[in-house]
Length: 49
Image (cartoon, rainbow, N blue to C red; front, side, top):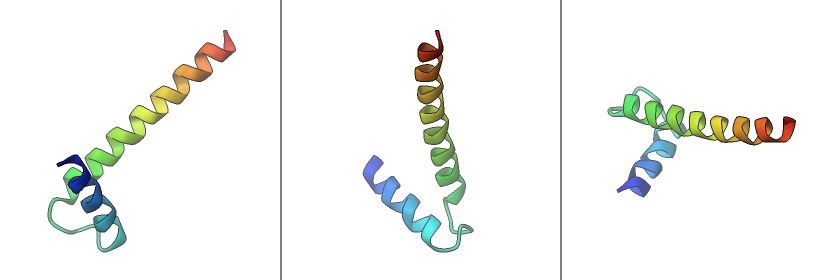
C-alpha cells in the first residue's frame, strides 16, 4: 500500500497538482521531509557536542 501511494505521489507531482487526493500527497511529502530534516539536525547536534 505505501508503495502505491508513493507512485501516486510522483505521478501527482509530475502532472497537475490539483488532482484528486493531492492534499494527502503533499502532507505525506511534508512529513517525510520533516523526518529527514530532524534526522539531519540530530546528527549535526551530536557532531557539534
